[in-house]
Image (tube, rainbow, N blue to C red; front, side, top):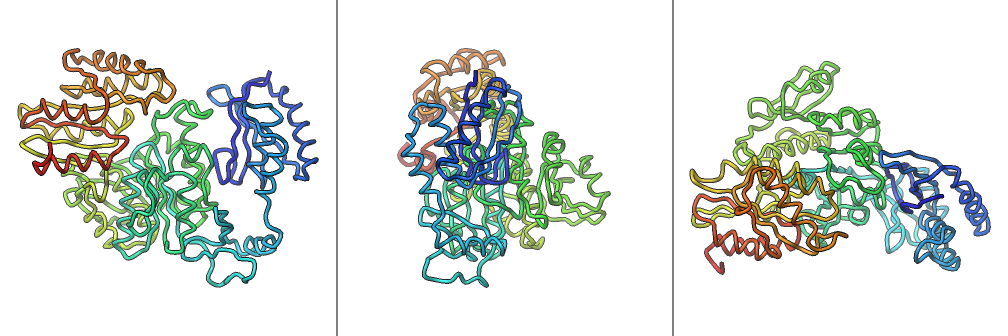
Length: 549
């Protein structure tokens, strides 16, 4: 019996293909899908659709199979499959036909699109219609005007993905480009930004955010944080990019949409690498074995490796072959090209490195420097941008923002998985006074496994003196109330933390109230915030100024 796990329409390149596809994930004998394929072909013929050829994938580590269909009508094909399979809330055939009409190309546009494709120009379908080209080199199609072909084209696109470090790396690249006079469009977990100005707030790290940036006539270079969720829901909004940055990959958000292992997640994130132009560059972390083994072979373009270790073996072999890398040696960031070596900037000159304490931010800086070099910036331009990037709530909100008052230090951060917590707690440990204590305010999330929740809490239990668990229904994500917190107690206590050092409260405000009421000079409060960050930053700014708290 065919057990359907998911039906999805990918509008752009994705894990399964580099063109729009409809994907069915299922569990069961492959022979059970044959009747579906026959019925699907019949219904496509009745609708006047081209009959899509099925491609089979799998099984994954979770035992799931997948079948994908290349089609110019991915949403229609998804709707048709839902109807055939009698899925919950499946559309009627009338609704399927309506979707097909929506996805069909206006006949008056068809000839223009063919000419655009002949010129290798990207095409964007937006809520307003069709756009040919990207950014400053784009034009919105209108039926009564001939396209200004000589002005249309592509702009540099930098796509940044990975488990941790995506947002800071994205912001470092964007800031340095703007410092060099480039008009940028950026997406990150806080919004859509046009040349440093917020256009729309929210998490825009998926297809829609990239589409908005690429359709903006004000953008010369697109800097796109590209998160796992968007990759696995709709694919990516561009068919080609100039630079693909993959910071790292870790066991977070697993299992997810048929992906069960770190290696499988790396392949999904590597979609941005697979769409590199041949003249582009992949920027990969040489300290991550999964990227070395799984992602590097997928790149159609040369690789620029980065590493926190000057003697990294992958980089050593790469240099012997004349390759380029950015690495750290004796607290200095170096750009190396074959046997040539160029000093870029000392760690002490990087505000984001916190005097060398924030090793993860040094890694993010290495990745950014490599991407900026790939974009053609000079060493001087790169250094100017990196040296002026400040880890404050204005430039890098929610990432190691530090507030101090009466000898108490509060570090507001976005850490939300084991690796993120580990590097954060290592980074802030030297900030506490001689007799100071470390407080951690943290909330588990229901879409992590029990083992992941326990592991995160064990990291806190082994590193902190006080653990304040904040309950928040927003982060239950399918679990019943009261199920997450016992796992957090278990993890912390297994790591040696006494029960008396653990508290539970409701929400961010109550958790911070409790920590500030207890803390004394020399203490450090690690305050992880995953929603309403602006409000919490404003509260801490008032507290730091001695007002209102």
